[in-house]
Image (tube, rainbow over all chains, first blue to last red; front, side):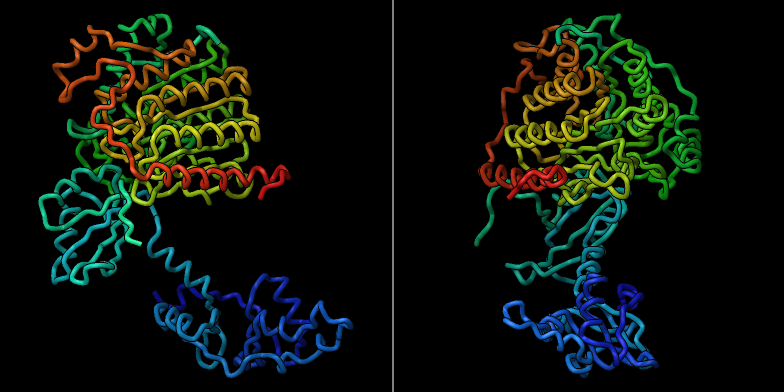
Length: 216
Length: 389
């Protein structure tokens, strides 16, 4: 999945001559948290977040509210330089940037021009798409040894039963590093025949827990 | 509410809805139920209504023309595989006459609506219907045409009534929900095992309808191993409050009985007691809000020998008399069917709980379900301006 597939293309922007008050208004009006500041060539000059604006705004605890600050230039409070990403970047890469650098939003830039924005929320949505229910299906989790050919072998069991795989992902088994857990969504309401097939194999089906297996 | 005018919609043609011998969806359960009722003297000949066969025209009210044609083709040239329509798959393989068999199921459910709306009876039961996974453009989860959606649509079109749809099948009623997701006149309520593992995976608490229909879909995903008490706690509290909020003119209920602990496909782990209690609650609501108007349909249920005949007989008995059968299953029924059954048939109406295993996590599951349904109902409280914490 690429950034261009999950980024937002309709973007709210500010020009460099905007004021803090303009930013405040836009943030509230569009219910967003970040606004890129761009020049006429769509070049990104800075980014302003709701926190930048809040920090600059007068406190309600002040005795005399100094409204002057609201008319200050946006350039005084925006963050710069800006970390950006490219439409053809992998979305995993962006997730890493969010995680490591504690950003929540990146402008997407191509040929020095702003073309989109990607936020933590877009990222979460992409993950929901990855693991989610796109069409009616049963979820089956299978613990398998981590070695060549396992995935293709497991898939054969579904093919043999004429069952379509809707989605699949895998993660390392949390306890035994030489195993992996494969998570399938398969298009059947009756997984029992294929579950029985697996019972003759070394692959282990993980079920809803009857008892408390938590080791916490 | 004693001995009411109740119709039992039935034709042997219902039994033609049959994929193949090993398929878990087996309509022999209808015959088993009907005979159990007759032998138990719960059902008389004059209560049985043969559905008027409908023209295929009515299918178009819900289903896409190309899908209907695909079913027809599959029905004649068995076997075919048309995966894009969900036909010829593991769940809904094609079979000779599948079009006609599916149309009969639809006819039965629509007949039930007609019986009730023309005032011939106050309640009607069609166990050949209840195929809640059918989508406008594809077969899914053993369901070809969605008889429920077609029947509800029929009620809306011809009688302009507000319909409360109650689905207690262990699987989420996704097809019906989908058909009325934007409709404020049809309130769909589904109680089901969570879709974390179980088919179809939808039915989350956050699914509440869209556009005009926002606030008219309710979903109660129950934990695996929920058992009777917690299921009934959630069901009681929720459905009462929803009925009060929605003020329906008629109730359509789907009575899948696959939540039972013997059912091979699910993990809700209920007993037969659940299937005695659910109809009682629905019955009471029908009288409280709808002048008795109640249409009950079948649904899932894959232990066709030990569970379905008893559960559905109790459903009928509650509709008809507001009582349940107690004591022993008539010997004559056992003698007739035991030779065909691969398992030993139960000889009492209630479960003797052989092989029933206590659930060690009961308390935790109970609490989880409680938190879940209170969260779902908060929507109504907020809407009505009640103070909630």
